[in-house]
Image (tube, rainbow, N blue to C red; front, side, top):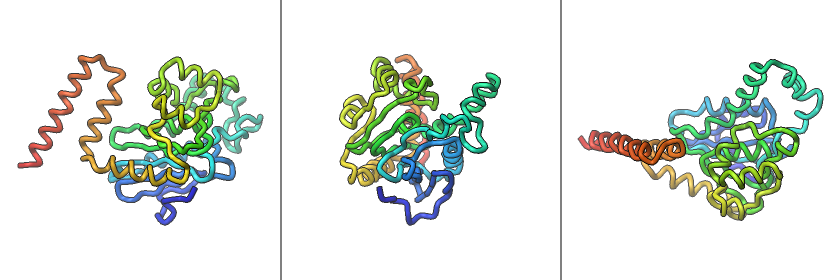
Amino acid sequence: MASPDKDLVPVLDKDGVRLTVDDAIATVTLTNPAKRNAQSPALWRALTEAGRQLPGSVRVVVLRAEGKSFSAGLDRQAFTPEGFDGEPSFIDLARGSDAELDATIAEYQEAFTWWRRSDIVSVAAVQGHAIGAGFQLALACDLRVVADDVQFAMRETSLGLVPDLTGTHPLVGLVGYARALEICVTGRFVTAEEAVNTGLANVAVPAGELDDTVRDLTSAVLAAPRDAVIETKALLRGAQDRTYEDQRGAERQAQARRLRDLAGAGD
């Protein structure tokens, strides 16, 4: 895929991740198409750093990837006895204490958590394979626009592991427990049609229209007042954990804040 942010000066460009900012829109691009944007701890740290470097002006973050595949998942080197240079191997992690193992995985997860912050709306543009960690990275975003050639798969369980990069919560929320379990334990591919039909993706388009569709969606998000978007996102994000009555109260409180803010703006 062509890079729509190629003319912008990168805020960050390291370890397979490039961050560019154009006023209210930030674009995070996976930049290692030769390896199908396979992931590593270094890439995860770069993603975490990208989140920390977002200017306050940013309202929408687009996540995209160069090449034919969004991300083929964890780099196979992780499964060798040596692992990655300078990183603990899986064997090293297994031999560490419970606290060390938990802290290491928590550090990896940080790359996947910031996309759902209330002050931004994140949009994943996904083409080709999005497998394992790639699937979970797409799930980390608020919205997903997919190319008609997309193939999602959660392969961790097939390898004797579990999805541990924050993907299980959004997956269950989007497609339900039974389908999420079936997707994870079989490791099968989920196509664009199924992704849209189950709510996993917002829309599927021909691969050549992916960037334009994301651009249109981004423009529509930016058309609404920022504070109203922030309040609405927080309401919807918290709805699953609230009772119906608690959600009613949260709506009243949020609307009171918006009315007071609007009334103040008119003074």
